[in-house]
Image 1 (cartoon, rainbow, N blue to C red):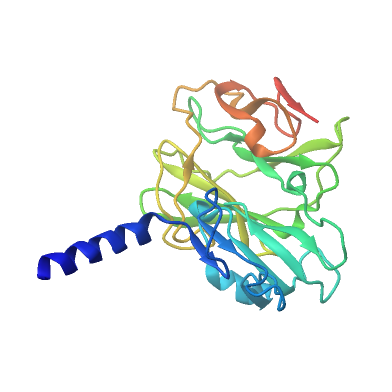
Image 2 (cartoon, helix red, strand yellow):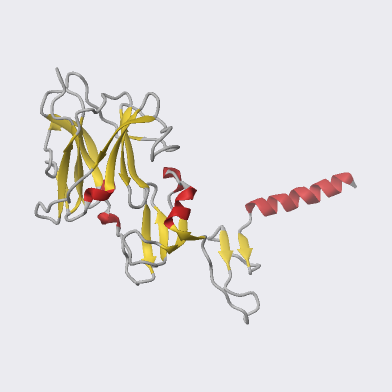
Length: 275
């Protein structure tokens, strides 16, 4: 008898583990892991309600990381970049919250409205010269809501913060680049840089050079850096930098980092097609 009960339990457990889940339906789609029916009796209908937050302050308590991309929520009063009291369906892209649709009916923050780190210089032969970070993106983006936060990779803590100013210029394709000199950038192995939006309390990027590490404080706390895969050394010639090339495209993922090459601070990089 015990053997029979155990066999029945095992069959039930396996069926439960490997079956699709249905809510309001007994025949969920084989193509889905979860199907929620709009009705169970063809009389009373309902919709799907994603997790709701009264405002972005509450939403930020989630503190998602890069591995949580695809997270979907609804913010009742999404003030950032929208009229007051605009409710927005928002998607976590792995580095920022993006407004997918708001009650005003418009897509407020398309992906190409997000600036990115486009060029870095931190080390060269002799005394370091011309250190800094370049931000690129759509022309007209106001950078005053952004900060560059420098991280010491050996301990995972911040060591400097630069609040950005100005707006991205138009270099002929509706996009441009702005260079920000920073003389304090550490030489890596590893160290990192976070691009942070103060208006939305979102880390747009958390990049590192010379390896990866986890942040132990600051806006990127609990996040792991993404190694750009190239670095500078004490023999890098003066006048060179690490920079994105390739394309065409209009967002960070459309380009690739290349080894030290002739620097182009404040302009779209040679070999980079942004459109």
